[in-house]
Image 1 (cartoon, rainbow, N blue to C red):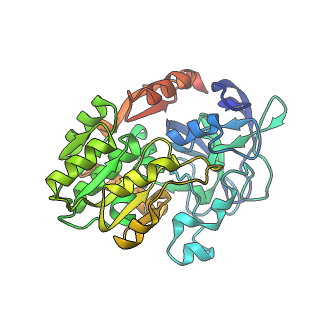
Image 2 (cartoon, rainbow, N blue to C red):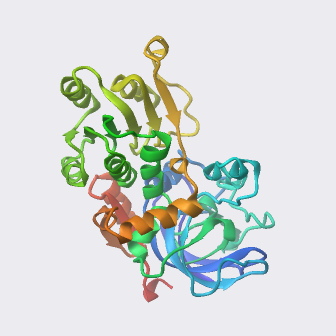
Length: 375
């Protein structure tokens, strides 16, 4: 079928909305009509080259929610009409990682930047007669997609698509970074550095885990105000201000758990994040750095002498097929605030405006809401 999509053809160029052609679902694949897509910072890394796909053109988008319209051979747990969320990491449930309880590290994740189908290694999308590389095997910046069933999670149809799409990456990643990877315990002090969609989700996770003080850090005043509304106890513009404030408030104890959710990680900043981390504390690096950057400033003596931990995480260390419905059930009963995380809605044609708003700090999360005009 022919439809539209937001593509980039080279680095440092704006998204272009143009015609694409999507193939029919094959074995273990489903076709989905997308209703909403989240605009995550990771897709901007595609533009800058921080996360390079295996080729061009690239169809962006890895947060999405919609309705199944067709299923391929062998699909048993999904049917036409089901409401679903796309998981940005597939989870097969069968590989060694999945069997070990690390479904966020499913072996199929090795294909995330390859752009080819999990099923048979072929391409499902073409534009201008060329194969298209979809972000994270998905490509939610299009109103239709064909994807392997391992990336699809069925949800309650009463949940609005504009909030459901957020749990395909940002909410699950941030919340899990707090309650799973950081393993925040009641009474612990926590710092969250960077207050976009992932950071606000981590902040909510810290609140639910029973954190005592939550120090929120972001240079944008509006985001700091929002953080206080979501449950932060203190908010600072810089890590230097936060470190001084944290030291005063905790009598030098510092933050037992630190969660880094900035837009892009730079190696020279790591030591400052470790500086606000308490003795025997853990700094969770949730944010992404450039794949080519391998230089980090870190006082190794203090790392050892104060027994600190620097921990990476992806997808919040969770199980997408469990965590996505679980978090949405929390939303349904008012225990997780997703509505206020959706700052603005955009049409597909306005995607570049949406990313300008994100870079300017005007959004917690912007989403694309698809209409018949996009199809």
